[in-house]
Length: 158
Image (cartoon, rainbow, N blue to C red; front, side, top):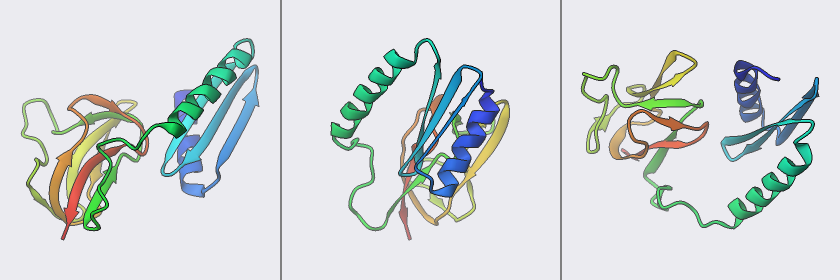
């Protein structure tokens, strides 16, 4: 069985390298990471459940490919910019439960400004803006799990 940290590291490597698929099999476990447009899909399958799981995953991939784009995706408006989660974890809008959120809809933000925290394995990772502009939408709810590459904010860049 692979450790969570090893899987996260593999996801980061696939995401940053441009490799489309990496599959590793060791001691009866198999991990497959597929890079997909700034996101990664991870499968860990035991040797005994492999055949059933592969069929289920293939069915899910076909269904996902035929689904329409989510309503939360960025419009064709050129000055809209999405800020995505660089890691898998739990999304927090504020540094602690009693504090005000880092940013709210309508706030003007600067490049490099902290927007939120994504907690991964008890580490609090501050997510910074890569553009200056106005926050148009905050997509996840506070304390909601987020995936690698999942859109967190929509910003109208200035």
